[in-house]
Length: 415
Image (cartoon, rainbow, N blue to C red; front, side):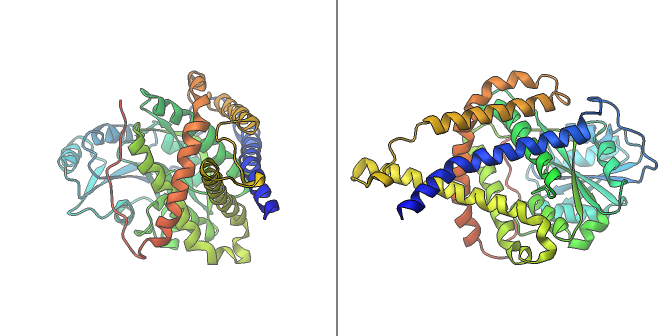
């Protein structure tokens, strides 16, 4: 028992340390292989042909943002595209605004749902109504860069096995500390991980806020699941389990709004964590097959992250017990404040932020100004990530099978 406790305490330190080195090395390999030779922020290379692309934007209570979103979609430099907006039972003026926008933008078509059916159902309906073979899906608060469609399609036309391409979300609202931290997070955590996963074989998930899909691939796997709280994670796994390729394109920029309150951030990250657990639970049996071997490392990494969260919970419980009872020395946790282990992890975290900042300056020149705030990230977001993971596992296990996931209007932050 004493040996097991010692092993788990070592695991609490070495897991984030090792994973950080894996992400940094993978992202640097990605950068050297694909990004280094490409000048930053240039127009995309011409394509041999330009197939029709359907830009899809599912909306629920997006009255404050939807006009700006449609304006940016219509401003795409890609020559052949249409726009489909789905008003999913909005209770504000989203539907009326979309109807008015149809008169201004001839490419726009609108689908109305009488009641809230959920994002997955909205995407399904739009995909079936789409005239294009390629579907570029964005959220109702997203502002798509004018060349984003072109960059996505450079992958789609390169081979018939490319089932999806995920883009590069950037944070619009940065007026609070939480907003500034998320700028660094999307660069040094999300962007870095996607680069590394692309190098090592499989991507855990596309970004639901900006992703392009081949319609025949979506049809092959049965479209988006309506009972998963994160339809983007689920469709990523379904495509890759059926041997469709998913790629990451950092030049496909998309500006988004994120929560800037603790309550909004908690709800968002809990949903993300629950979605990851649901996917692992759903595809465990399929992962045991040899044909799914390229997905094993991604699944293993996520399972190890779940174990790490509960190890951290155990450390916290032991510390609390030590305040009340006299514990054996090998069970006693003196403090939760960072000691040399925390200092080492914090320094490695800052190195990771530094590498990601240098890479992402290609796409956002003032990235360096956010580096100062990243010293707070390990304290604030590791605690948040650990807590949401701990809560998400029982929520996913106890969720009633077949329950439809519907829209819940998120915190859009302070702009």
